[in-house]
Image 1 (tube, rainbow, N blue to C red):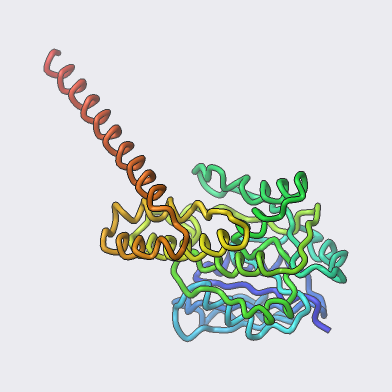
Image 2: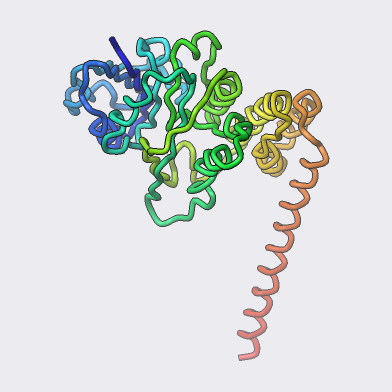
Length: 312
């Protein structure tokens, strides 16, 4: 009997995928599903990377590049385990993670949340990304209020999710370039009849600048996906727990400076998604103010330098 179906989407980082797979033990009750999102040289992977031929692993080549959401959905269609466990190809499981999960495998809960370990790769500052996820678990543990955890834990990893529950809910990932995992996580978090917390960490998230979740630069298409998904997540959080999904305001204010047509199109749907246009306008004003102040200081420094050069 398969206890865990581990689903890993992958695109063009095979060395990191190998690192991830090597952190997962070979066991008869673990089903490994790796879905390659049409990497340029994926046809050579089975020959080049022997770990992809290990027992219990299914390697699936997607016929076209459709993103991590499509890859995870393909994995869900092939999963047979009692529990669904997600991982990103550039992350790893902690040593002994599956022994820890074994302690919870007979739980009546539909989702079990685990603390996440983080590593920052490269010379950059990820800001609050290092703390926000685990803070949700802390709030629940200290207050008993699970609403923020259910609505804001918008990544699929660091969880055990019952497959029967996912199938009964009909939960699937959005097939978008960005935020493909948000609605799946919000739907399952809010829809789960019973959730619980674990004290031990089973998963290590490597924060890489330039990864799908931490792009080097934003374009209007990425920001539109982020805003559109954020609006739907905001509606669900508002209607279920009277909470706002704050990232929608960050995304909409960013989109204002990139693509006005898409911005106004989404704003026309603000009311039905419980998005405050006042808050949107306030965020846009804050960004505009920062841009103006930044330009002012640049101009002042430029004038000072030119004046100094002329005076010398």
